[in-house]
Image (tube, rainbow, N blue to C red; front, side, top):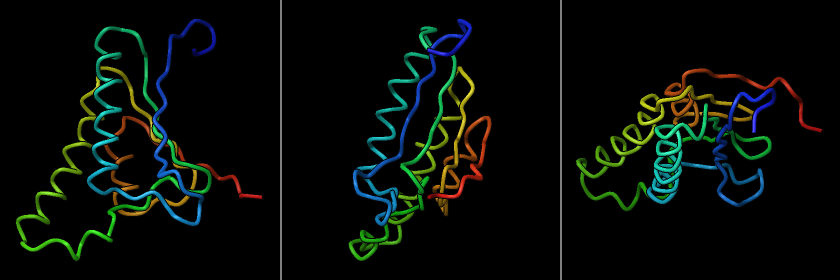
Length: 131
C-alpha cells in the first residue's frame, strides 16, 4: 500500500535466487517468469487494483542481460533471432500497462538489464555504495 491512500503498488524483483556473485540474466525461463509477473500486474492494473508497477533487482545487481550459457545450443540463426525477439516482446509489455511503470536500477545493469528499464515509464538509478 502506498502512503496517503495513493493505492497499491506492485513490485517485481529480478532475482535468480543466487547471491550477487551470480548476476540475474534473461534466458527462456527467466523471461517466462517475467512474462507471468507482467500477466498478473496487467490484470491488476486493468481492474484498478494497483496504481503502478516497479521493477528492481536483487542487492547489488539489477540484471545483466542475456543468459549466454544457452548460446552454444542455438543451431540456427532464426533460433537466436526468435529468442531475442521474445525478450523484447516481454519487455515491451511493460510500456503497454495501464499504469505507470518504474525501473529502479539498484546495481549493475547491462544489455537486457538496461533494456527492460527503457520500456518503463520512469527510471531511477541508486547512488548508494554497497557496504
